[in-house]
Image (cartoon, rainbow, N blue to C red; front, top):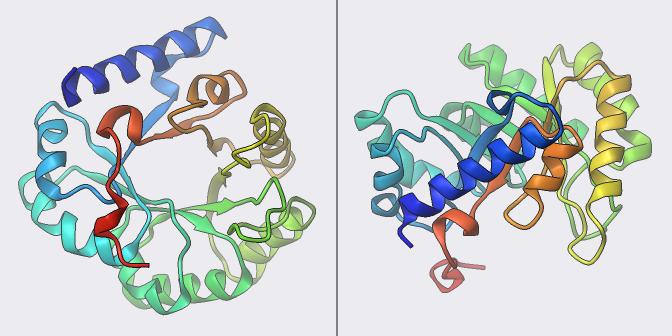
Length: 226
């Protein structure tokens, strides 16, 4: 099965999952996660018409995507990994969407950089639905106050929420929790669901699903430092 076959199969599965719960498949955006894969591996997907991609690291994206954007200027690039405050300027310059806003320091830094640069990436708040100490994201019980801080103190426009459920737990309660937080805060975009559970996420309201290995294949993490 080629990478294009896997892309087509994923698109078909997304459409079926949406139709099964009476949702418009066009309301679900596929973010193809290309972290650790070189630019040449992405080109066939771009040539096939896919335009929305996700990266975990600012530095990796800065090395990979500028040349691809020259050939395919309508790319939409999402930061789905943790953002360090010292990388805020590069992140705003590189990404169209930042899904990992998760603490006051980052919100303030983004507000300053957006004001300085005039660029306005779309922003999602990451919620640590499993309260995992090793994982990024605002805790669920702090999400309402943090969203108010982003909006009222920093003047940020928050478009939606993102989560990464614990790998050893059923994902559905985490997706439902994220949807509840979004609903009470007037947010309509939900980034949730990955290769193993994106169909379930669609049933529970996902508007963005982040699919990597099901399309790209197995990653070689030996090429990464750290």
